[in-house]
Image 1 (cartoon, rainbow, N blue to C red):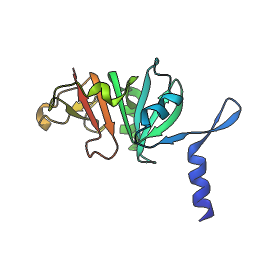
Image 2: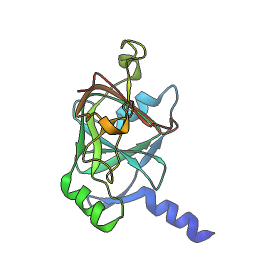
Image 3: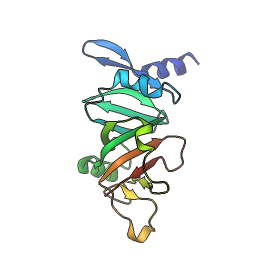
Image 4: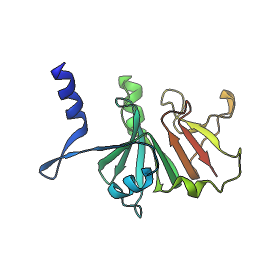
Length: 167
């Protein structure tokens, strides 16, 4: 049991610039945006990807993971798939971080002004496609999604990623 707790501790502690830092897990709630704004520079883009080990979204700014969240909203987003990483997944049959959403952190209130029922579900499966695709379309004509005005990412939603203003 002791080894289990130690491995959990190791998962959330990283060595950065000569010292250990704790990666903060930010829970959804009233002060969610204030808490995440303390660890993220809102004037710089962030990369958000699904962390399969911890069942959350990992938020990366620059070259380091700054926090883990259950929910996040981004604006002026692009959906990025790194081809070399996807190739490695296809060869090794083992997942790695090579696909993410890149954009600016925004308050969910900013996305509230979008028209109702105009959001698209977006998904990515490295074994089926080389890009993110709209989940609303039939399998035969998956529409590739490259950019979106707003992206809403919720770990508790079965689809996970919603995009508005996607192209």
